[in-house]
Image (cartoon, rainbow, N blue to C red):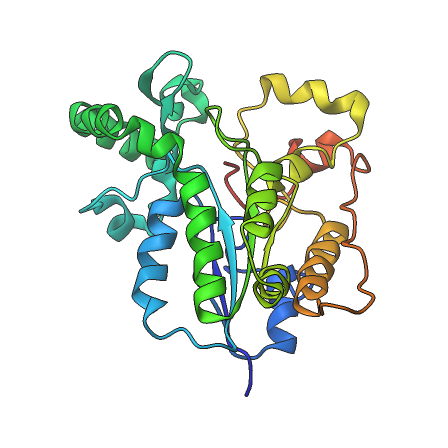
Length: 294
């Protein structure tokens, strides 16, 4: 039976306008029944809403690729912005500042000459609904803080219960102390009491031990990383925030997991390429902007 691949995530997988070298486009060449539901600027709240709609129809041969973004990105209801100019993800500029413990709108701090009509619509939306948004964050703060651990555990449970392959990538470090990646991985294998279940665990589920946001950030040469300090991150010239080299590695990484077999020699997961591009080639004024960075 032919595999069906379902991709959930944000701009690290968004299929809009992507060239052939994009990791998800290359994956579709191998698995024609690939459905990419990723949308720039959205978070797990949006992605899981789509995933729940597919849950009852999942089959053993399905493959789930889940990119877990910031759990504090909320898919606010009745979002008039998305119907206006098709940019649901722009609302990711409305964020909960964990240090100041308050709601902020990133665009409010932009210099006046950089604020465009899209930014103004988000700022106005933020000002209109700020009290309601703050109430939501304060009510569900701990749920949001620990939702990454819950989401990973839920996806692991799905992989075992339905005997299908699930690979998970986290995008950003968690905003509060919780269970580490290592502890989660240890728990999902040590908790298995039977040999068959241990094998199924390793063959069906994988959690990448790196954050995709760090990989993207560290493509810049080490001696140029300091330039991020004053970067408004308004335009990333890379497709899905990766250079072509790391698109290839992402593609190979996923294939390595899909080809994993228990009891035989398996290739080690490839290492992502780091510190090989100039900052200004990615973020400079001459860079060709494609995505609003997260």
